[in-house]
Image 1 (tube, helix red, strand yellow):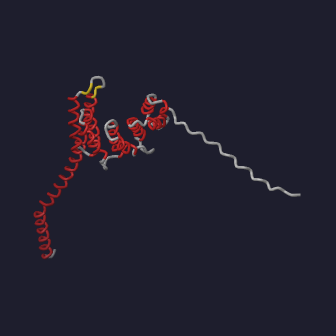
Image 2 (cartoon, one colour; image 1 turned 90 degrees about the vertical axis):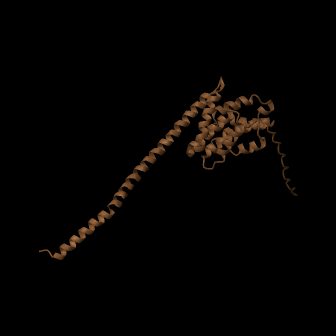
Image 3 (cartoon, helix red, strand yellow; image 1 turned 180 degrees about the vertical axis):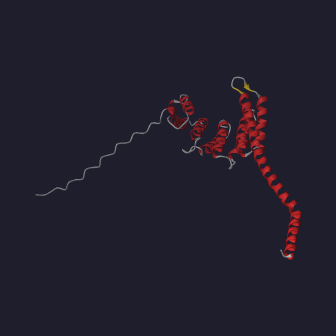
Amino acid sequence: MPDIFDEVEEDLRAERARSFGRRYAGLAAAAVVLIVLGTTAYVWWSQHQEEATQAIADRFIAAAQKADKADRPMGGLDRDQAKQAEDVFADIAAHGPAGYKVLAQLRLAALQWKLGQTKQAITTWQDVSDNSAAPKLLRDFATLTSAQNQVDTADPVLLHQTVAALTDAGNPWAAVAEEVITLIDLRQGKAREAGEVMRRLSTDPMAPQGIRQMVDALITTLPPEAAAPAKTAPTPPQKNSPAPKTPATHG
């Protein structure tokens, strides 16, 4: 027969187990609920982020299409559509994620310039240029676009220094930067310097075809002395050194 004390001990253990279960069952259930809720919340947040990003992408594309339609080549700028697109780009630039923020700033600056908001446009381009978190490609693009639009108004010396920093051979915008420099040189009356850069761009296989065609057309507008390659001075003939005298021999 089983020992009575063993039975009593088993009953006590069973009672303690039931008591423990009653006491902590709520906590265990709550923990399970929290895990389920946490997983559900994470999945919802991920989907929400994707949906939010997709919503911003849709708004950006719609605003870009509206801006493109507003810029009518033959009919001038549709200011109403341009303003609607401007408002969307401004909102994305202020509240959108980093990638769309920079793209929206670039489109916003272009619209601001077309709408005559020149100071705001220059400020927006400068914000992108100064944004160390933005890709260098886009920062340089903002610098160049701002410079192109200010060729006739900004300080030519400062403008030249800014753009010259982008003419390194490894920079994908180097040809565009050199094109801007030719315009700055022409503004300053430096036709010969501009002609030298144009001739180099005209024969540069790495320069975009559009730029090569444009500089070819610009070269024809230069004065003849600037359009033609600079003549190199002929190398003066070197005087022959006198042959050393052979010492006389006495027989």
